[in-house]
Amino acid sequence: MKPAPPVTRIFNEVTLLEVEVVKAVIAPVRTPFVRRLLQRAAEVPEVGARLPEAEASVAVRITGDDEMRVFNRTFADVPDATDVLSFEGVSPHVGDIAISWPAVERQAAAYGHDANTEFALLAVHGFLHLLGWDHATAPQRREMNRLTVAALARSRIAVAPKRL
Image (cartoon, rainbow, N blue to C red; front, top):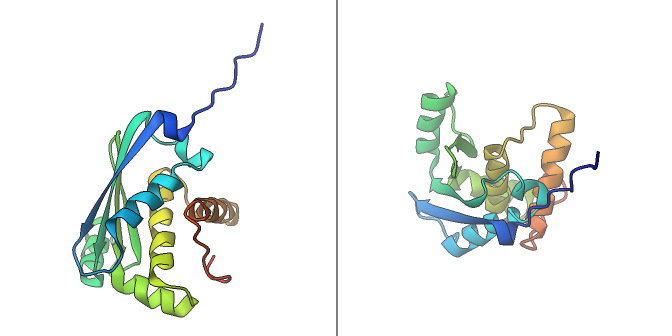
């Protein structure tokens, strides 16, 4: 019996990722930046392999701490605001990512890189969660960090040394 040939998915030839960006607060991050960031992240082979075939979509909502607090209370039974939340979708819609712009600014200042870099990190982090990755254990955290760095590198983004 012959082994089955390996299956190779090449992101650019198989899956089109549509990225919708909604700004619920004023934030200087540009919509084309967000779209390109996640489309390039999807080019990481392990990431692209988890996308629905042919086409997929994701929505990114840039919001404030108050709305993030409401999302957390409503969907996660957590009383506080967080920096990023992911809401799983139904194929071909991968899901929704909510990012707190005030948290982006605070964390960028704390880690010593610009707000676009922090935003990119959180967007990729949320995207990886939508595709099934988690960071509950040390091995999971290392893998998620490795994929985050690989995804950000596709957009020529490097986070501050102690951020991950």
